[in-house]
Every structure is written in structure tokens, then in C-alpha cells.
Length: 188
Length: 288
Picture 1 (cartoon, rainbow over the protein chains, first blue to last red):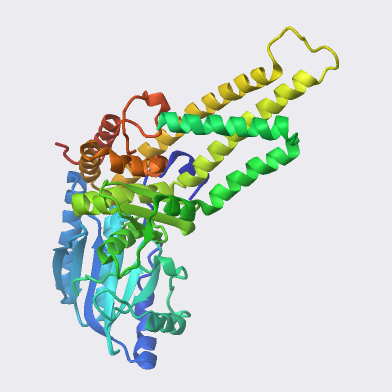
Picture 2 (picture 1 turned 60 degrees about the vertical axis):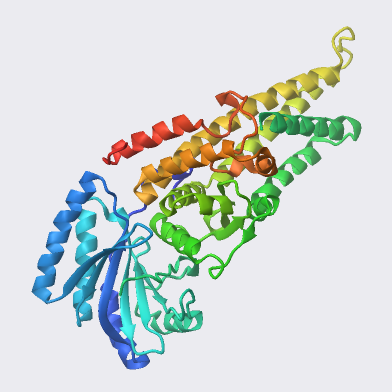
């Protein structure tokens, strides 16, 4: 955020940071061995669509590519949109690598088309705890944070902070807790 | 609005002259007072504005949807999550405050939440978050600080010119205090217009920011239209109740319209809609 942004106001949204999605695949071992958390075989990527013709046609290309990637890895892909006007790409695949790969493909293709700033987050589900554990990746931050919903609108902060402490050395975890976006209605 | 802030400014000028002329406060202490006021406003802006509006900070349990909406918009804009407050009035409006994105608060009225569609509320929230991202409290504090400083120095400069220079004082001219008063008011008037010009520019910038964050300027457009048309439909009592918060609101609450654009802190709604339509065309989406 430079002086120019302050003086004239932002002229564009911040784009995605360097892609560090793949860090999750290396951290998966620790998650399993130390915490007993295994990939639940589902992930979702969410972004804010523009309904401009340009965005639509760019996204159609990305969408076709996603289908091709999914066919190769044997994953299934669903498309959803939510009440807040965000679109979701939901991926089902037992392999965490394939889930991360799909998220990466979507992000890098959308960025290549010039719409990287529309990306919000990717969310990966893990089973094994009392509540399902989610790892959320914020594209604009280039970092992960844990999300453990314990009720309709409540999150288990204690477990989340414990996960942060245990994974800090392996995963780029967002240090600023005010950025730990919750995604209660993730269609996973 | 114009009248009240004009009178407030006049009061400030009189206050300064009394401090200076009657109590004989020197230049250095005066500067300390001016800087002190500016710093105080700057550092307490979030709490001060929320308290002045009678707004209540709400937790996620109280307003889960509002929290979800703000969190995601912050994610899109890459901002830390601000405090979220609700002001209990049927007048649909919203404002943001705070000296930096880390010490920010955004407030919506219950009227806004009830009368607007969720996507329109989102457009309004994105506008307020853009004020935070653009650091408008900082910009406006600095701008008003310089205005205060200019007024102050003018008075001291004049004073020094009048009383300095030994016995060359002209006894036939108008009284010194009158000249000081006149020049002070002139400086104040100029800074008043300048600050409002900056403020209007910041509104356009925040409208553009909202269009970028939501990707859908048309919802902000319909929200602005709804807010401004409902403003005039609602009885005056409510409007006067919230009038003091005008500079912060997305659309100023107005009892009467009588000031020209030069003196307004918000651009006229027609111009804002035209600017948003231009942004929408740039984004390549159809506009009705």
C-alpha cells in the first residue's frame, strides 16, 4: 500500500500473492502422524465473479481446462454459487495432491487471464478430529489458516490456535488473526 | 449541514481569538493545542465516531450474516477485519471510521439492513471498506489539520504585523481585532471549501473501490438510489437525530437542500451514479 494509493484511492484490487498452495501437501504427513487428521477428499475454491462479458469468456476457458484436468486425475467437479454472490468450484478426489493441483490450476489460469484479483480463498477439508478441520488458503495473503466450526456460527478457536502452533514450521500460516476468514457455508 | 459546520468553524475562530487575545496564549502553546486536538481526533476516531453515533459493536453471534459479508469483502480487499457496529435507526445509512485499517470500524444502521437487498448492502459495505483501505480518516485529519494551522498562522502573522514595527500603527484604520477576525474567516472559508472538495473526491474513490471489490457497480448504484430516495421519505425527526454524523455517512442525511456543490462534503447523487456507470462500462458489463 503505497503513498499513491492513499492519495488517489485504490485503482485496482490487490492481486494474488505467490502461490504457496503446495505447502499443504508436504504438511499433510504431519497432520496425519501427529494429529490424526486425514484428507476428507473434498476441497473448494471460491472467487467473486464479474458478470462482464470479458470475465465470462475468460472463465469459460478456465472452466474447460479444469474439466480436462479433472478427467486426467479422476476427480469430480461441481460448480455452485452462494447467497453472497461468490462462485465455488467444488472438487472431490481422495488424493490431496489432486485437490491442491486443481486449486492451483484454477488460480494460475485465472491470473494468467488477468482476473487473479477475483480469487478469494481455497478450502480443504480434513477428518479425524471431533469436528471437521478445514484449512483455508487466502490467495491475496499467500498463506493458510485453520478453520474449525463447532456449531452453526461458532468456531473452536482453541483447536485452531493449537493447529497453528503445531503446523507453524511447515505451513505458511497467516500471522494476523484478523485475516482468518471464516467460511461457514462452504459447500463441502 | 453547511450552516452548522459554518457556525462551528466560526465558534472555533472565536475560541482561538479569545485564547490568544484575552488569555494571552503564545504561538507555541497554541500550536500545541492545535496539534493536540488533531492527534486526539486521529487516535480516537473509531471510538469517538461510534460513541457519537450511539452505535453498538456487535459480535458474530448477534449478526452472523453481517460478519460473513464483511469478512469476505475484507478478504477480497485484503484488509484486516474491522469492528462491526450497528446503529439503531430506520434511516438507511452506513459509515466507516478509524485511523488505520487495523483500528477501523464499520457501522450500518438497522434501516440499511432491513430496507436494502443483501447485494446492495454488500455494495455499501464495500464502499465503506474502501474508505478504510484509502485511509480517508488519515487524509481528512491531515487536511483539516493544515486548515487549522493555516488559520492559526494567519492570525499570528497579522498580529505580529499589527503590533510589531514600533509606533507605525495607524490609528485611523479599522480596529486590529476586526482585521484579524476578517482574515481568519477568509482563511477558514477557503480551507472549508478545499476540505469539502477533497471529501467529495474521496467519495468518488470509495465508490470506485466498491465497484472493484464487489465486481458489480450496479448494486451500489441501486443502493445509493434507494438510500437517497428513502432519505426524503422518512420524517424529519430521525434525520435531524443523525445529522451530526454527516461527514462519515455514505449519503448525508439532509433536512433541507440549499447548499451548492462547492460546499458539500458528498458529490450529488446524480454525479456519483454517472461516475459508477462509467466504471461499469469500463468493466464491460451492461448497465440499464
